[in-house]
Image (cartoon, rainbow, N blue to C red; front, top):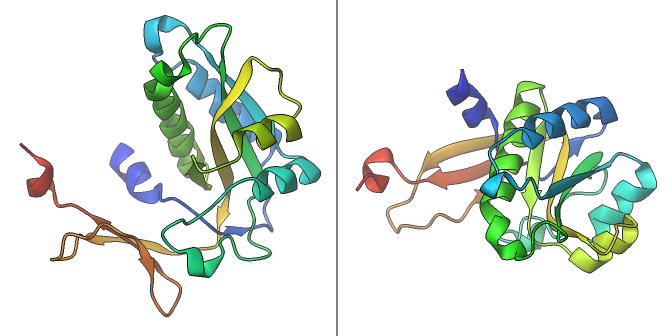
Length: 191
């Protein structure tokens, strides 16, 4: 069921590198994303699959993870993502890239759910050096990185919980390393 996939689909900041994600699997995720609805049906997104170890290492160094947990320096050594997909906007089509944020979100969530169904976790990363990633992956000038997505088998445990009484939605790790993700209750988001 879709709800099971949504519940399983948690942002992952540490990966078990014993099971690689194949280029074929990532290509299947992109294939699902490419048929999603798109602004004006422009289909301005392009996808750069990254599985080569040197490229994944380069992308990893250009991303910032777990900004709410800076003391942890995530991901931990040895738990780096084994694969990435970089979503790019083709500026030959997307004349105003800021107008395509919904397309990026739809494509990213579609791939995240596909990954969850395949037994993988992912992390959508907006905090990255766009120019550095473009250079590291030899992207063309019209291929502008909009979002990085890390993929792999999760090495973490994440749990959902209700937002605290103080209203904080900040995620945190407990002493056992369990990642806690506060979510607002249904009755708090319905208008």
